[in-house]
Image (cartoon, rainbow, N blue to C red; front, side):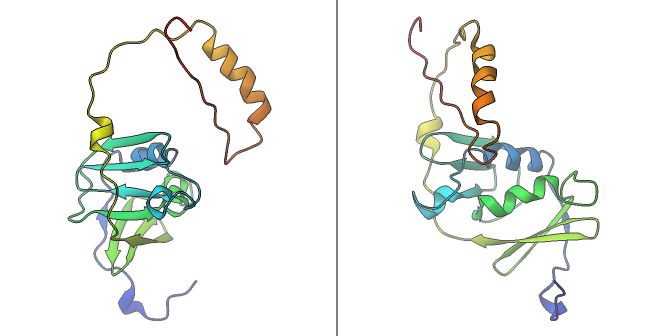
Length: 168
């Protein structure tokens, strides 16, 4: 759409931080697809030190220097488009902030995502743990591939839940 008021168009574009697109691509998979569980669950939280998302069943936090001075929320469905935008679908290369918008640019393509300043649930307590190695069951990959045959046409909800128990 043509922007009639050019004064609202971003002037200060910055290079997107390294790993930003990878972080968005990974974290958006953990965010809820609707806000039925609450607004923040359908968003990615972009903080100074990380990007994260959750749908109350899974959490993904990707540590990186975002370059933002204040935390923001961006709807998952909007920001997920920056990963493959542009003429060659390699993703956005620059970004800028204006008012309530976060703009992404790839060549002549620009995408503006609404940014929200609402509080985001602190997920740190769920991510502060000591881990131990787990041996995944033999045949798990083959079983997952077989199950994928039944869900592969569900592009938005092609999810699988695997429950691990001792010796099972």
